[in-house]
Length: 383
Image (cartoon, rainbow, N blue to C red; front, side, top):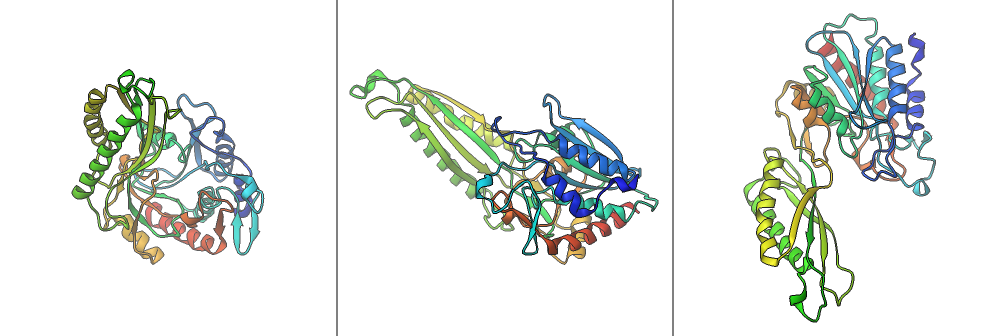
């Protein structure tokens, strides 16, 4: 049965050759089942107990929980099976074909983050014939790059249960114990169009949006005066006014305007409270300008994540890697696994600098050190 699992490079090649883009645009969104099925076949062949869990209301999307051993504690090695979209014409080679050159493995998802699964499986192979006192769980999730629906579904279901979790996002094997949250929101204003020669004939959505932007910028200043964390490179919460669309001609009063913005809260800032405060500040402007103002999330927010700087897993990962734990600005599935009660870190091979761009790669010199660290973590928390 154990011959059903290929070698590390073959596994990586087969995963990259299985497109699994997740995207907020339906035309680009794809199923992740081909990746899930490969992982399930390999892990069940190694003796793992496997369960494929379809995402509610999302045909073609599923999570995988693969468990070796049993018990109340144990270790989760977690990764997401999806990738961002890509532009093949900008790649030097086919993004869906694993290519080795310059001491690197190139391919879409090679570092973010299909590459983590073969390394986790390789580490697990060292323990197949050893009696585990606590379970080893390899977790594969759906739609991290878009809605995080896979991790949210697991958190809602209260699964899996373990004591420790490592999410193998590309961090160059530096343990990450904290990151900001992410809110991508929209403000939509409906006014009344009319001839520009007589302002009384309409209600300008564009002028109302000008006031909205001023209110958001003022609120940003208040947040940055109230919240700060010097551990982050950018120590304050940020609010970026990203794009705006409105109106159609200079001689017409603008009847509709839409703004999209990005807010990155620090740990300790509650997303629901931020949304409520923004709504509270913007609604008086609707009456003032005679318009309707609606706010909406572009996709579900990612909460901030913070583990204790001196947690057992953070300290163990620092000792094994030789890297001091750090915070990062990008979001991960860590807050959802933490909701399940696990001591959680983010740590994996490759660099985030190579993610989400043409010619994404995983450096070969990251592979052996990552497998070695994962083997030692399995030994520490499962034997």
